[in-house]
Image (cartoon, rainbow, N blue to C red; front, side):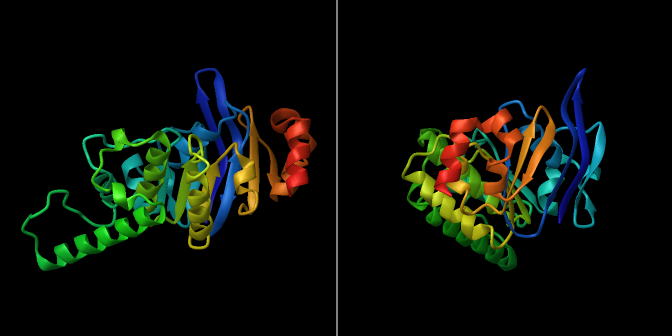
Length: 258
């Protein structure tokens, strides 16, 4: 469904992404891995139109994503959570989530507004959807809190909810487990596993042990190029992946855990 071909990104004389192809079907959980500086986040920036390309194409079904502006991408079915949670500090937890629904329905953030019945009904449905997602990650109890007052891990979970609330066809997640506690991580694993049955999830993640059991495919990048792709166990045993990314001891532990 999502097809990125020959993606090349240059910053001056530096080639950050070098002719990368990646294909993501309609449903499932897929991992993008590699050492720091491999070009993973830059590739995400291309998919969401934050970063221009020197060469390549990106299509979601029949839609040419490169022909659209960044703020239009979510309307076409691509949403994203960030490595560092990008939240609105002046809005509550619930209001931050409702902002994520702007592509589907206009939701008023000020209670008591006089709205036509049809608009009010859509707003009520939006709030019910936001409540359901927040409850799944045990965040509903914090709906009136300021995001800046939350621990970092909960801010990351909120960022995921805000991306997911737009009901995207493809959800991009940039290191969603970074900063999460042992109590928070299982909640997110369960959510990703459930949502992967309904949509495509492409995730940048270093903690592969958390997602090995639910990922269908792992793609590994190094120095802007794709060096391996396939089933998780096969990729973790790949000699080039071990040499460039995992290291021998980490690879042996991963294989033993499979």
